[in-house]
Image (cartoon, rainbow, N blue to C red; front, top):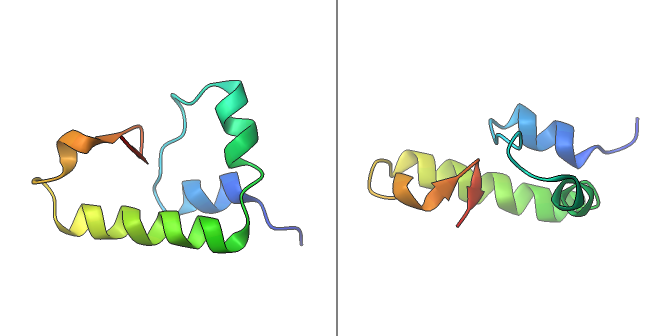
Length: 62
């Protein structure tokens, strides 16, 4: 099975619904290591909520 960055990010709870087509294309080309890093950061931010919630937009860092 081919690695699907968008699927893996969605599975991790990262909402990409507000991301435009061009950004989705870029996110869709991320490597497994890059996705793993984003997921790790996302999980750390959720663990420390609400202190950092104001800086999370659409699941991506802002």
